[in-house]
Amino acid sequence: MRLIKLIFIFLVIILGALSAYAVLFDKTYLFKAAYYNFSAIDDYTIFENNTVAKAKEVKTWPLASEYNKQAYPDSLNNLLEDLRTVGVLMIKNDSILFEKYWDGYSDSSLSGSFSVAKSITSILIGAAIKEGKIQSIEQSVGDFIPAFAVGDKAAVKIKDLLTMSSGTDWNESYWNPLAVTAEAYYGADLNKTATALKMINQPGTLHKYKSGDTQLLGLILEKVTGKKLSEYAAEKLWQPLGATHDALWSTDGSNGNTKAFCCFNTNARDFARIGKFMLDSGKINGVPVIDSTYWKQSITACKIKDEKGLACNYYGFQWWLDPQHSEIFYARGILGQYIIVIPSKKIVIVRLAHKASKERVQTVPREVRALINWGLNS
Image (cartoon, rainbow, N blue to C red; front, side):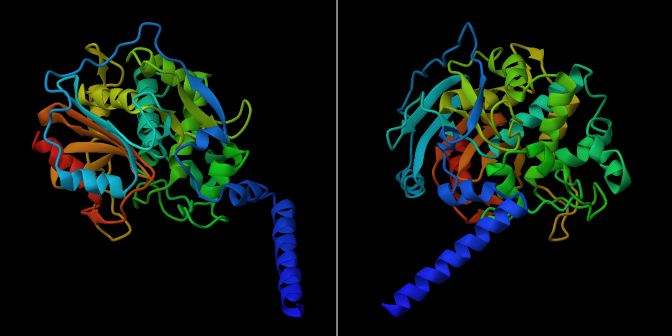
């Protein structure tokens, strides 16, 4: 009994110390992080959200004549089920060729995208450039964000954010509750979190994946458009694309900052519209939303040296690339959310899930490689 009592007292002291630390050092987001523990695809239910309004005239995907008769290998199905997939969808020639859902999900179920939102944010930067709200990718971040107008930060350009080469000290750790990524995800002041960074590298010299770079892009977009990202996304993408459901874009609080680096929530069929948009070279019904040059740069390897000292051949402007197939690109979320585009086959594949494989094949997750092979053989 004495040992149990000592252990209890020790735990109380530790919890008390952690609570005091959180309050004294303005880290109260830790309470929320501790309560919810790990991120999940339905986290939109624990956050405030802005609505990305659907189109007044929705456009439903037609079903292909071979709908759900497509060859679907058992090995792929087993892999997807092992990784707790909730939905997989293949669009070919603008029609649904195959779709399957698990775990009670359907073609209209909301699901979190995590970093797939980065690719959407990149598209919106391209739209703002085309509208003249941003001069070009060479424009200084400091023209929009005062914290980046002085000192070493003044050298950061929009293209450095797009290619994840800003040179800031953002720590992209998903398992450390004290890391800035957890603060961005659960915290209540994204503006402060994203701008209170230090420079540790010269901009444009080191590709290092950082959600903070995307968040800065989001702050720029809301500054230049005078609109929430949800409003701008609805105007430039969601409504022109004919989305059938409202999407939700999570924020850091009521009327707060949009989580540009994550947390765009919709269903598989509407996610596929983003893939279709990129398959169509950034056009909707033949009308460019982003310039062809920006579209091409988005899906071209940035070639900036990465942490292994190699020229990055797997990342463009917030889009991932397949080093084995130079034409193929995809959006990617941490729990296995993907929008994969295979231009030569006119195919878009969406996969939503609770889990991603840790195995990589030339930077490409195992299940993405399997989905790409499936698409190439379709």
